[in-house]
Length: 294
Ligand SMILES: [Zn+2]
Image (cartoon, rainbow, N blue to C red; front, side, top):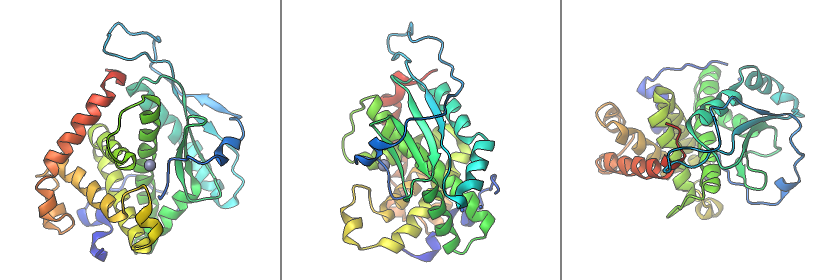
C-alpha cells in the first residue's frame, strides 16, 4: 500500500479533540480467559432502564446493563494511561451512552487492563469486552512510525481504539442478541462499528473510522503476504482499510469526495459505496431495532 494512504486524518484536515501518551485481535475463543479473576470492583453505570418490561411488543425486554470493571494495573508503563482512563471516566461514559441506547438481555462488562498481549476481545465466557493497554501502545507505536507527532499519535490512538471498542461491542451484542450473521462475523463487526460511529457519533465517529483505517494500512505493510495473516479470520488490513473508507464515503459522498479525488479510495469501488453503506445501515438498523431504546 502506498505510503500516502496513511495519516488520513491529517490529509483530510479533520480536527483533533483529544490531547494526551501511546489490532489484530479480538474475539477470544480460547480457554485461558476463563481463569481470569472475578471482578473485584465492577460498577453499574447509570442506566435508563425503567423496567424489564415494555409495552411495545416489538421491543425486547431490558434485563441487563453495560457495566464497568477496573482492575489493578501491574505494568508500570501503563499506570499513567490507566489513571487517565479512570480519571476521565471514559469507560463509564461509554457504558452510559450504550445503556441509554440499547437494551440488553444480560449484563456485559467493559474493562481496560494490561493483558500481557496485544489484544482486544469479547469473551463470551464472562460476557466481557476487554481493551488491552498493549494494543493501545501498539497503535501509538504504529502511528508514530508513520511520522506523526507524539500528540497526534496519542490522539489517533484514542480514535482508533473507539472503532475497535465498538467492533468488540458488536461481537458482544451479536452473541447476546443471538443475531444471525451471514458471512464473516469479523467483517460484520467492522461494519457494525462503522454504522454506530457514523450514525450516532458524528464527527467523532468519522475520526474513529479514519484512525482505524490508518492503523489497518500501517499494520498491513508490516504483515503483508504472511500465511498467518492470509489465513486469519479477519479480513486483510488492506481490505479493512478500503472497507472503512467505503463506509465513510458511502455515508455522504459529496462531503467525503476528497477520499476519492485525493487518491485514497479508487473510484471503481467508491461508486458503489453509497449503496453498500445503505445496505449496512438497513441491516444493522433492522437487527438492532428490537433492542433500541427510542
Ligand atoms: Zn472481531
